[in-house]
Image (cartoon, rainbow, N blue to C red; front, side, top):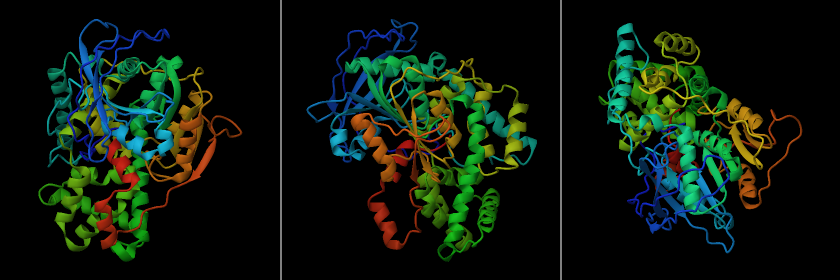
Length: 530
């Protein structure tokens, strides 16, 4: 639900605009105080030349609205139709994902007549990106070579455990005043500050991944302020966050097996075996090989996991990963593996910031086990059945075992007071497994669930599936949702999955470099991990 990799697409321009003092939130009273006027300035990019930027102040502690203020960075593609449906706030997930470029992506991906009716507004949540202050607990925390995620001994385990503990301690040392207010409830209240700064009585909201949880929490706190709510690839609100991460481990292992099956299907191209089990065994042999001798002295087993994890989010990466996999196994080509890591697995400064916010929010949002034996026992139990990602995920979240701020109690997002809500979910999604969409569908009375049957990608709308996008655009244009028969445990509509990718020919690879597909553009924004 956040970005492990550093390939998030940057806004490409310095966020400009005046700091605008927004009134403090009035909890859920329904009273809209006088709105501060935002000042928007041009900050267009090559991809999104009409992008505008602004900033707004919000209380660090919403319980003390007259106290310290922090800055939120905003972006906007303004409406062009004569009649506006108001702001459409967009969020790519995380926690820790930057939403500034998301405004341009959504506005350009929707049908022109629909996008024209909205002010599409992106934002960097507190602590993220261009918002200030921005967190970076341990710069270059993911630089290679890192210890093997799967401990070969208790000493190996202690090394990784100490590394995670040091990260938590450093966050507490650098940001003691911020960490108590890095949480989803505070971010949701920030969203209402932005709403009031726009002068809108209600918001429209479109969130992916962790953005679904942020949207559901906002709707719980401010149900009377919700006009339309689109949630794509839904967090299970009952598992926040330790249980949800365990569920991911099984799901990502299944997606890695799906990748192996796809490679086996195209054995004439990759020559790694026609049996999926044979391909999977070759991948683990490659993992053993880079543990003994890292590829290019840069890609060891942990870096290899980072490289192939994006394939669990988006199968459009499979041809690139398979090419690197085959080059290494069949031709001992270490450079191909390093290039794949640099493209999909390496973490830059934006990734450092994203991970710091991820840890700060998830560790604060809910209680995590403090007894390390619980983590160890659960991890080995799951690893026995799902070895691809389990230990890697444990270490990614392990700072929460030592987090220096006491956890909050998760919000119960059940809601009977909303207008129709539209949910999207793929049945084979790994980052937010299918059960989460079903659970949230049950929690939000009156919601409609649209399912991509057999789909395995994380984030399914605006990525090339016309059936899914038709439901999305009908809802944004007219507020209509599908209504299925039966209980709230069942989908209201089904769409066939998007077709699997094909191996890259030389010409196809050239085309891919010239122009990424909608899916690649979306998943570059959503980022990777958890």
